[in-house]
Length: 172
Image 1 (tube, helix red, strand yellow):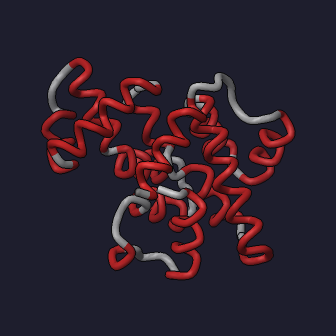
Image 2: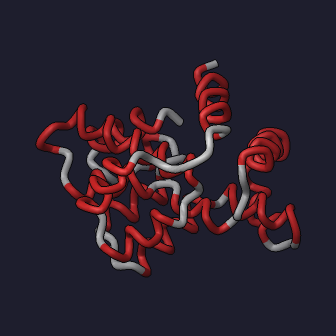
């Protein structure tokens, strides 16, 4: 039920247009490298708002242990979603499609064309984002969390305490 509630909140939150407040954008600028900032700015406005909310929750929970790489991981974990170009309603269709057909079909769908391809790319946003961040020389922690944020805890490579805070803050 928690997953359904999270998705419902994300859906209604994504209906509000625009990105984060200017003071939040300035804070993001102080955290990310120029190359990472460029990727973050490509995110859909609601995704940028979500990423700031996740990073702020991480910062509040970890205090001084919220290092720059940890905050960057919180801000950039969904950056691969930019590859699909999907917006709110098509993302709902993608999520429902994955629930019915399984996430394993994403690679097959991504090799297709049209909206099916875009849904496949969306469902692979973790891997795609990790590749994008690797190309910008992001910290290995940022790349690892982006790749692993939808995996079960036993598959996380980060310090379990940090990974759990990142996971909980994302509420996915």
